[in-house]
Length: 189
Image 1 (tube, one colour):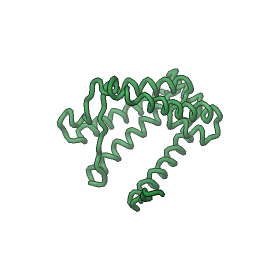
Image 2 (cartoon, helix red, strand yellow):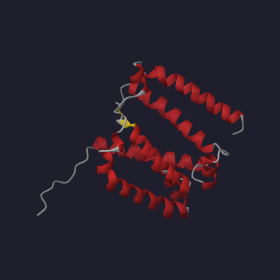
Image 3 (cartoon, helix red, strand yellow):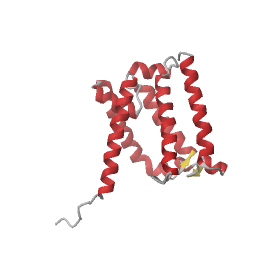
Image 4 (cartoon, rainbow, N blue to C red):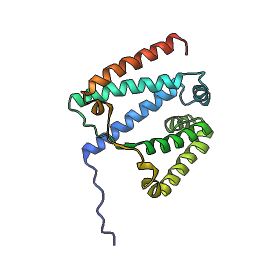
């Protein structure tokens, strides 16, 4: 006899899921249109000969940074940064970097490449994500009591560290990113 209650999802939570799915589809479409799902473009980025991926990601960071902080200022969202540590960054960077270097895709571009029907993304990318997630999940209890918590800095953000309003960091960073993107375009990179 099943005594568990069915999980009820609040209508507001459903709308968040729908909005998340919609934005994910738009982002995937834009990644594909920008060429970031093509192996040659990604390898060009890794070899520092094609900066398309960097331009796309910096544009996303710029848009997201301004958008999320504007919504926070308007009271539309609350931010709850995850705690971090040097160990988490090292392990995450190694896993991400290894997968990126071996296959030439990151998780987002794998999804876009699968949508394009690229067999290498389906076979290597999806398998890599599933195997990597499984191995990490299996090792997590040991890692969590070891390297993952080395150099723990909590939920610290740059504005909190500097003890300033978010916009004191967001505006100069936005200007720097914009100027860097402008320079990349002017340099033909």
